[in-house]
Length: 186
Image (cartoon, rainbow, N blue to C red; front, side):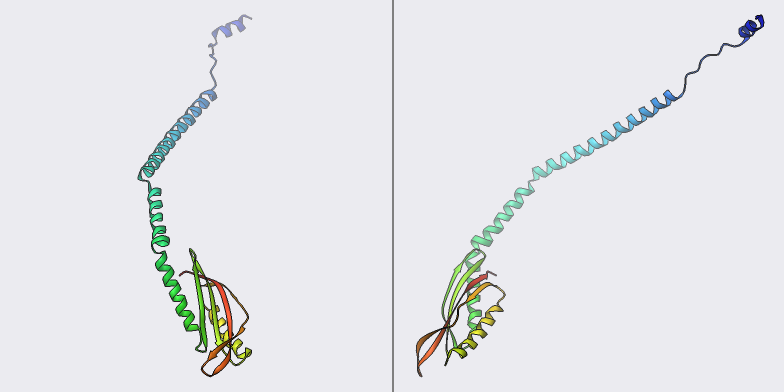
């Protein structure tokens, strides 16, 4: 026993060593925390820059400028230029109608009611013909030429109705057709 006690007495006293893993975890947590704080600071800088840019945009007021520009456009387009635009569109429409009507056909009556972006029209045309069939042929050519107008968006045609008219050669039959529709302003 003495040997055992002697050996124990002669043996160096070992100190207990602490494990390394808590220190490693602490260093990793500190590094992650530092990286998160750096990311937060950079995001705050970008948010502040965006706020300053938005404040400068509000101070510049481009929306108000665009609204004013749009208002001036609508005033010039629909109020100031409206009578001129309508009169030119109606005159052009009447000119093209006169060109489409063949010489035996006569434009008897034309009404034009202007709207904001289109106008309604009612046209009465007549043709002196020997009978209903020649009148239908002339009217069908006129109706076909009206269908080729690009600005007419809607049109309705009545059947040719006989009417009498005095002509230099005596009394002959006149056939009348009524056309109503809408045309867009150009």
